[in-house]
Image: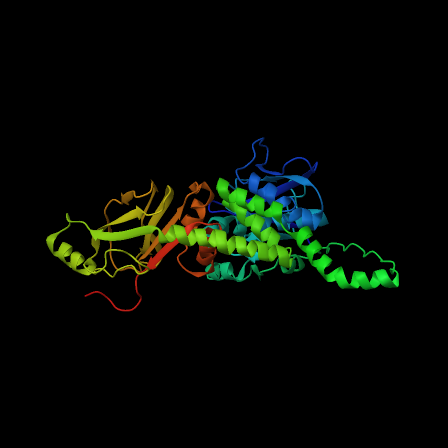
Length: 437
């Protein structure tokens, strides 16, 4: 197997994995910038990514904690998971070029993606920006004679396909096992415990046993597999606003593929988290109105356009081509305090995503928040709102990613993360057909 340097793209630069040091299992795993005593902000998520039962590294590589040193910071998100996992697998097999090794390598891996407990690779956001910030460093390595291999989810590769040089290696995959095979790393399947042999019972006892065995089996399976502690953990994470840990707990238990566990978490997701998400979204009343201070002609056209559309219910109204100065009003009809984030997005002159307006507020029951005035026209406008009765530190990033990635799997993934963790989501888009004249 050829040795590799591993790079993790961020929106600021490509960050290299310099070393992975195994520590005692009772120590929490951390990610640091090389030469620093300070753990990076993602260290908590990294520790969960390593440890059983939430993580995958111990499942694949055995028990242990780690200190991973990088040559630059990774401060947020989960897109580092795929690159870090590949680095761990390479380090285990002796294929990771570390800082103490020779400065040249046969290969360079540039990988980005989120990894599920079932070892699926999921798409992430901001790929064009990440590639742009990595391009110069990767090009320098390529010019030095090193082979550059890019490993991404297929949808992420589609986003940057027009930017990648033809002589760079492209590997698209949705499974960690396929990625490992592509770079020559073998994943050892977990061993299966041997079955115990049962001594035959006496004839009478055998008949009784046969009669009650199905009932006992079902009761034992339910009692043994009922994920009481796991559900308690998930509920505790939701109550504390730890949304990332909540989704990791759910995904970890669903990956067990046990019918009792699956059904228990299905009811938890649908009848608690899903119902809560819908209830929160339905209790937001969002209206749009014109600003009386705008020019008379434009104001008349805007008032005419909005005369029949005040409350926004799934469709953002069409506006005059000259644009309108408008305000949004949000009322909390829940019986408790909520945090609300709003954004209006469209496209700029180059047809790229453009955030026209963004604002957040805490609203008590019955409170109404009116945004400052802002100018918008018909530019494929969309209104996004997210609301929760939990602090927004656990879900604000997903909201930002949702509004900055207006189409495709990445946006659907972020909407799914919000709703799957009990956050209410409201989306209203302009109709695609017809123009305002």
